[in-house]
Image (cartoon, rainbow, N blue to C red):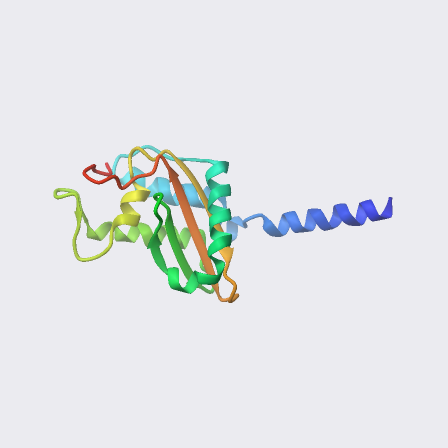
Length: 162
């Protein structure tokens, strides 16, 4: 019985360590709030959390941990947004970086001018209604890797985000 109690305690502590802290801006609510605030600004409805997308994001992030510093700000082949940063790089900070690309998106021509805007257009893509994100520490223990994945995916050539 003592081994069971110790095992149970270890499992509980490990589970608590894996839970995102809301004060660290990595909770489900933090990801959704950051996305939905940007979407609201352009009249697009809110997203909802999808555990399957989050599981995919976590699996993908764990496979990228060795290459983190080389993936500072990139897009994935399936509509994912990636970001990596040092220190207390939070999920919310990654979403804020993507949303900051708004300045480069020109709705009148449906194009990016003067910088990258594809992360932003994915965040506000009107047909994307489900979201799953993950944040993992990179192998070098200095960087954090954040990924959000969307369904249905956005950034479809010839279509407008909103």
